[in-house]
Image 1 (cartoon, rainbow, N blue to C red):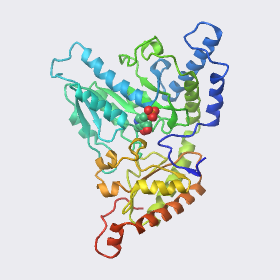
Image 2 (cartoon, rainbow, N blue to C red):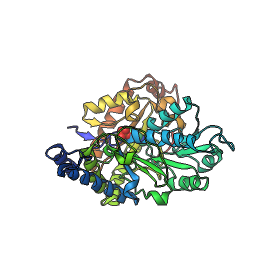
Image 3 (tube, rainbow, N blue to C red):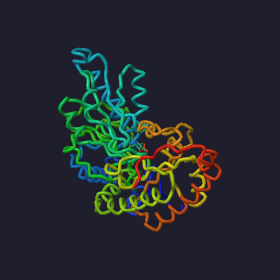
Image 4 (tube, rainbow, N blue to C red):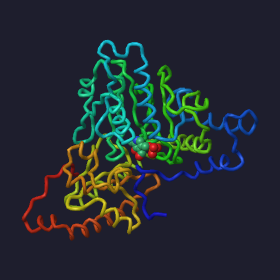
Amino acid sequence: MPGIYLDHAATTPVRPEVREAMLPYLKEQYGNPSGLYQLAVEAEEAMEAARKTIAATLGCETEEIYFTSGGTESDNWAIKSAVEAAKKRKDFGTGGRRCCHIITTQIEHHAVLHTCRALEEEGCEVTYLRVNEMGQISVRELEKAIRPDTVLISVMTANNEVGTIQPVREIGKIARRHHILFHTDAVQAYGHLPLPVKRLGIDMMSASGHKCNGPKGIGFLYVRKGVDLPPFIHGGGQERGKRAGTENVPGIVGLGMAARLAHTKMAEREKKTAAMRDYLIRRLLNEVPFARLNGSLRYRLAGNCNISFQFIEGAALLVLLDEEGICAAAGSACSTGSKEPSHVLKAMGLPDNIAHGTLRLTIGYQNTMEEMDRAVECIKKCVARLRQNSPEFEDYMSGRKMPLSFGIRL
Ligand code: PLP
């Protein structure tokens, strides 16, 4: 068990109620939902109950929820199949629809970015929208990027590194006005923000169990009724013929329970999390010199604190924090360990040397204020220790070099 777990954007602990709900389906309730006998019917009923719970959290119909293996698969499915469907349409290749054009952003998760890159290799054209220094896109730029052959807008609800929340409702309105499909990767947002998909004008939405205290390897894609999305995984007739493969019944039951719990007293829990985040940010910015907050103060996930400390390497800080029992991240989970600075911080205009000194602390509802205090003390100590060995810091201290000007301070 770690001393202090502050990496909830990477994954979250499974809630005990979720584990308990799953257990029977890993023990005696092992039926295959496709079967026709009682054991199978019970598995099918449990799966449909989970689907119903999830649909209720989004204000949609149960038939609009498709279970997948998680956020990555949902993103791949939504994007690749939207393009495939567009290419099959009768008017493809006419009236300016020469190829398939997708609009996304420079700060998406790699599940979206690499899918778009793969489609570019197949002849699609992709516009990667810029973001401002807070990590938000401009809806005016989005609208300007629309072309006659634009088939999909894919913009994440909230970013996994800096926690910035995008203007989803406005994007939905633009997409509707131009009759373009709107997909949002809500992997970091689902279970933390209310997402009434109909009111937000969302056509497809990806979510993942392990980001909201559910199990790993399970997620869903919401697909609005009327969107004819071709299947992504071919095989049996599961998920109404759209996503083949024997269903992960324990995972689905766990996801259903996680969804129910995440949407019970959500506002209260997120308020408590945001109070811990604000306290952590305030103390770090006030007590550690040359620290800056990345992202927006206003449009930010309740649990996200992303701070750059000049004159240090984030990866080295992680090692020292690990020795103190603190789990944190330097960038996104998948880019940890890479020498390249995060593509998100780069897109927000952060110079490489500052991006390298970035620490992402992501808070969960089980964390406490005492843990925030302990984390701050450890971070102060570890940053000071790393700076003692930094030639750049020594240059600055001896007056030979000025630090770069810093952004958000409180
Ligand atoms: N999208 C975002 C924004 C994420 O943060 C992640 C995971 O970190 C994913 C997609 C991938 O989700 P999964 O781990 O369920 O495949």
